[in-house]
Image: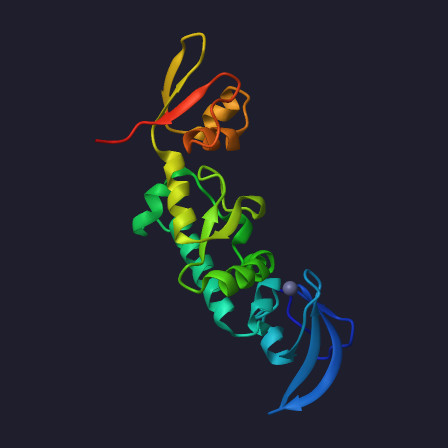
Length: 218
Ligand SMILES: [Zn+2]
């Protein structure tokens, strides 16, 4: 239960995540306060009647004040799609995401995703445009977390899916392994994940003796 605000409130009162900063006057009979979020520091104006019953008392409601532009549309859609494929079993793509244990728990609230991804989205869109800006995970077997997501073009995104393609790797000792998961292979053999990628794309010859090649599906 959200704490009910008492009828008389004072500057400095805390309601959920917000502190009342300043009384601004009446609007259609409702008191308007300037409030400050104690999680992210944003300020906005709010009707006390809206806050009183617990509506709008969470940091997640800081998204109400965001400037509406094309970048915001892209960030919001990407967030909604990400949440859908990781949390909604009815989503077609769920089996490849949430169904495989991929989570986006750090981004339950849109505002947190916005804070981490808006600026980089803006730069990417300025360079590649709205349609060619997609959300990508750096390690395709990892979760949607700050250090594992970035904006990418469709072309890069396509290259990334190759990381899930079967590959064959050979060691000078004669050992031969067929694997699909580059991240796991890297961990198991204590080698750098990105080096495997370089080898598979012909940009390096070997890593610690291992050579790699994709096995193309026929
Ligand atoms: Zn906030």
